[in-house]
Length: 76
Image (tube, rainbow, N blue to C red; front, side, top):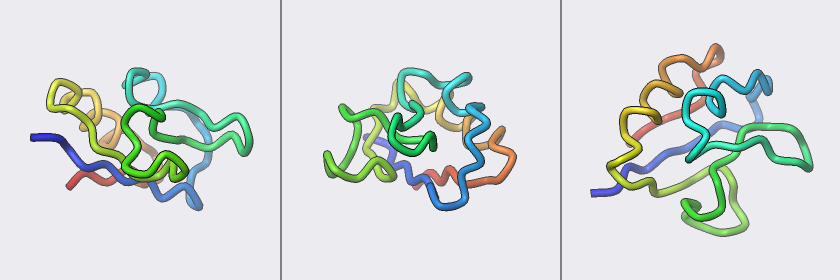
């Protein structure tokens, strides 16, 4: 079952911890420099803040969420 991931991009401080820990799922948006979910996992291709991620990435997504210094990555 896929994991639903949300990023509160308004609160992102662009420290890149999520990208460092889980580069298969997260990337930095070239337009605003904030954390984003990669296009292939986005629930809506135009919304970089919400995605459906396969179970195989569960551990790295959880590590990214737990390591985010501003706690903006949420897993459902």
